[in-house]
Image (tube, rainbow, N blue to C red; front, side, top):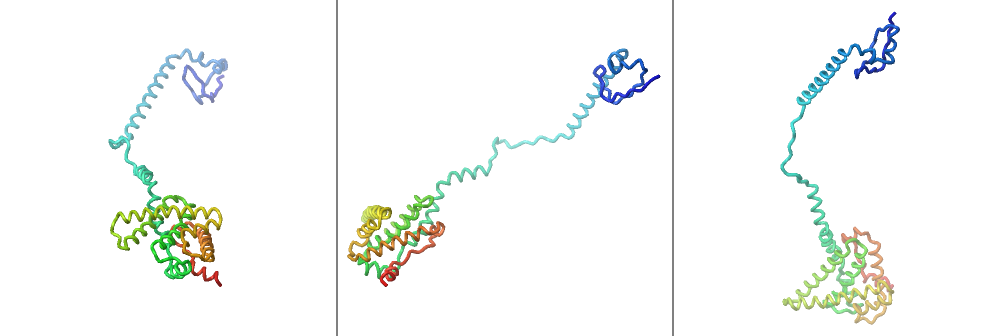
Length: 282
C-alpha cells in the first residue's frame, strides 16, 4: 500500500531542489528519506534535462532583466569642462579671510571720531576754571595741554578693549589733526614750520602720557606732580591742584563704569570741572 510522504524541507537531488513536493511511494521505498540520490539515479536523463531547463530559464531571466534595465536606463548627465566648478561660498570665505585684518582698522576710524568728539570743554569751563582759577594763559599750548588730559583719560579706557591698538591710534590721529588745523589757522603757511611744530608736540605728548601713566599706577602724590608739571605750572594754589587730581580720579571711575558700546559710540560726557570746583568750595 502506498503511503504519502510530504517533503516539507528542501531536499537536494543531484543539485536540484524540490520544495513542498508530494511523492507516492511504497513502504519499502522509505530509503528515499536517507538516500534520495540513489533512488533517482535510474532517471539521470530527466535530471540532466532539468538542469538544462534551469540554466535556460536563468539565462532568460537575466536577459529579460537586462532588457528592462536598458529600457529604464537614464541618459548620462555631463558636467561642464571645468573640473572644479566655482563656488561662491569659497570665494566669499577667501575675501573674508583676506580683508578680515583690515576690518578693525576701518571700524576704529569712526570709533576714534566718536570718542574724540567728547574730548572737549565748554567756553565757561575754559574761562572760569582754566584761565581764572588755574591761572593758565589763552594760548595754543594751554589748549593742547587741557585737551590732551581728556585724550589721556580716554586712552586709559581703550586699553581694556579689543583692538585697542587701532582705537588709540585713531584717537591720537584725530587729536593731532585738530592741532595741525589750529596751527595753520594762526597764519603759518610754511610746511616746514608746521612739521617742526608737530614734532615738538609729539615729544611733549609722549612725556605727558608717561608722567600721567606713572601717577595713575602709583599714588595721588605722583599724579599731582604730573599735573603740576604739565598743566598747572603757573598755578600756586594747592587747592586747585587737589581739585584737579580729584577730578581726574572721578572721570577715570566714570569711564571704568561705562559700557563698551556707549564708549565707542561717544555716548558719555565728562563732568564740568568748574561745577565740581563750585560744589567743593561750598
